Image (cartoon, rainbow, N blue to C red):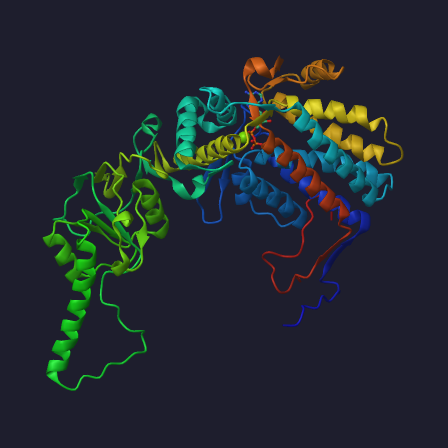
Length: 541
Ligand code: ADP
Ligand code: MG
C-alpha cells in the first residue's frame, strides 16, 4: 500500500510552533478541568449522555473520559492517559488527568518566555526520576495477612466512590474476590480478577445483598426442563467440542444413489454421537457442559442416565467453571480422564431470578474463580457500583502483589513536592524552572481535594505547606471530608505505592509528549467529512 500523501492546501488545517503547543495545552487543560471535581471523597458525579442515547452516571475519571466525545487530538491523548492508567493499575485515573493538566498549564509560562520545549522536557524527566525515588523512600511495607491491614487500603480507594456508603461491604467483596482468584507461584502472586472474578449485575433487591459466591454463576438453564436442576456434590465434565455429528464444510456434497445409503448415513451419525456419549458417560457425570451444541440424540442418551446438560456456554464462563470446580476443559472425548472431571463443587443448582434462569456451581472447596453478584436499584447504579468495585479489586490486587504503601490525601504529593523543591536548589541553569514546575504541579492533588470539599483553599494549603516546610511530617495531608490538615496515619488513609508512582509517571510523560509537538496537521478536509470536521480549537479562532 502507498503511504497517504498529505496535501497542504487551504482546506488542510495546520498549526505550527508555539501556536500548536498552546492550543494543545488549552485542550488538555479543558479536559482535566472537566474531571477535577470528581477527585476525592467529596467528589461530584457526572452525568454523561453517550452516543447511543444512554446515560452514564459516574465519578470514575476513566469512565467519564471514555464517554465524552472530543475532537482535539491533544484532548484525546489526555483521555488515552487515563485509559492507560486504568489498565496498568486500575486506580488514580482522575489524578492522572488532573496532574497532567496542571503540569501543562504551568508550562505555558516557559513557552511564553521562549524556553525551548526540549529543555522543559529535560527538566520534567529529571524531576520525575527524583520524584519516583522519593516516593519509594517514603513508602512503607505492610503485612497483607494481618487482619484489617488490606481492608484499610481498599477502604480508602472505595471511600472516594459512589458506593462509599456501603464501603465495608464493597471492601469485603473486593478482598474476597481477589483472595479467591489469587494464585501463588513461588514469589510471584497473580490475581487475574478480570478473567476469573466476574461481576453479575442483577437489578432489583438491595445493594446489601451483594456477595461473592464460593463458586460461579452464569445466565443459562439446563437444556431440557426434565433434567435435574439441583444436584449435590456433582461430577462435572466440561467440553469445548460439540456433542453432535460433525457435518462437513458448507461446500461438501454427498451424493446418495440408493435409499439404503441414506439409512446408512443416519446410522453412522447415530453411532458417532453414541460413541461420544459413551466416552463421556463412562465417567458417571452428573452435569455435562459444552461450549458448543449438544444434539437431540445426545440429549436423549444423557437424559436416560439422568445427566443434566448445558450447551453453548461462553468460553470465558466455561473457564471460570473449570477453575471453580477443578475440572479440565476437554476437547476430545476419547481422551477424557478421571482427573478431568470436576468434583470440587458442593452444589449445582439452577434457579430463577426475575424472568431469567441462572446456573450456580457453588460451595466449591477450593475455588480459584468466583462470581460476584451485585444487586441494586437500577442498572445505572449497578454499572457505577461495578466500576467502583473494579477499582477496589485493582487496589486489593496491587497491594497483595506488592504490599508497599504511601500516605494518601495529598500527603505523598506534598512530601514529594517539598523534597523536589529542596533538590532543585542545587540544579543550575534554565532546567531548574521546569523541574520546579513538577514540584509545584503536585500540589494540585491536595488543593483539589480541599476545593472539592468546600474548605478554604488558601488557609488549608498554607497550613499544609507549613507542616511540610521542614521536610518532616511527611504523612500530613488533607482530610477530604472535613477539609482539615491531618496526619494520614491517624486517618488510616493509605494507597499503593505503585498507583502513585504510575500516576506521576504517566502524567509527566504525557505532558512532556504534548510539549514536544510543534506541528499539528490535519489531513481531514472540510469537504470530505463535514460532521467530524477538521481539528477544532476550543480557545481561539
Ligand atoms: P482517582 O480516580 O484518581 O483514584 P479518586 O476520586 O479515587 O480519584 O481520588 C483519589 C484521591 O483522593 C487520592 O489522592 C486519595 O489519597 C484521596 N483521598 C481518598 N480518600 C480521601 C479522604 N478521605 N480524605 C482525603 N483524601 C482522600
Ligand atoms: Mg480512586
